[in-house]
Length: 244
Image (cartoon, rainbow, N blue to C red; front, side, top):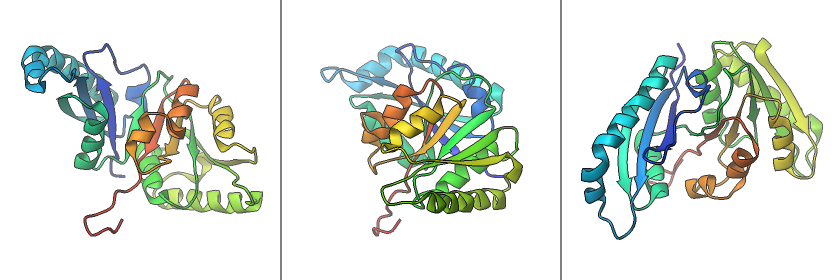
């Protein structure tokens, strides 16, 4: 059996955020790190907020975890009261070696998933995520690459066929994998145009900093312009000796 990929699902647990419809089905084969966090004003001590709100936050977090477990996921929960939500998210990604972060939007039980392949960097983690979530063959996968300047369609097809081979080696049935390319000038626009036809999107992190993922760079733009959920594959982090 393919190893469950570890996926971070951050939820502002006291701000009314929930697990949207369809997400338990999408993450049925995942190990979910469900982070319930509450951003505390700078003038308020985090310990003070924890004492005041921990019971309500814990009850809410346990309820959300039960929703994911009912869909098939294994779940561990983390509760954080923090002055900096992004720093907390970044820390949890490192501590739990999360391969991807979910930007949750409602979806139907997924039938078609678009997998954006930027290049050869990060393909190992992309394959691990896609094979772990969708290797049972219940959804159709489309591997998609928007051509860079000077790149030919033949180059893009070679890239995508190579990823398809890797997925097949990882246990994904080849007959559920399709490939598609686009040569629009703006790769983001090409991805967003394609995304409208799919139930979920998998993209790679476009910058080493998770801050840019959540606050303003390309993957955040995709999530803002796409109604369905977006799984953002995280780059492998450098080790202490500087190697990746």
